[in-house]
Image (tube, rainbow, N blue to C red):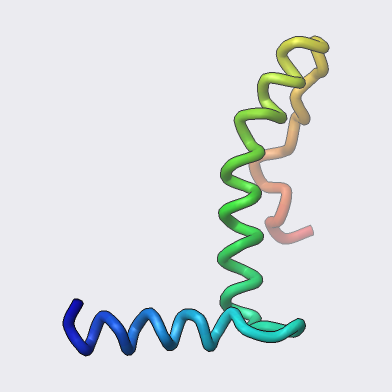
Length: 63
């Protein structure tokens, strides 16, 4: 393993160390979790025949 790879790995460990951690790591973990659970939730909706939300196309547009 070359030096740059070792430094990168060390930096990743340093970023994840501690109870607080960094915001970037927490956000990355949250996004990963949301992507992983999306399929489970879609299957749950399908099995239980739950209606999908019907959002307006201009929901965030001017009032």
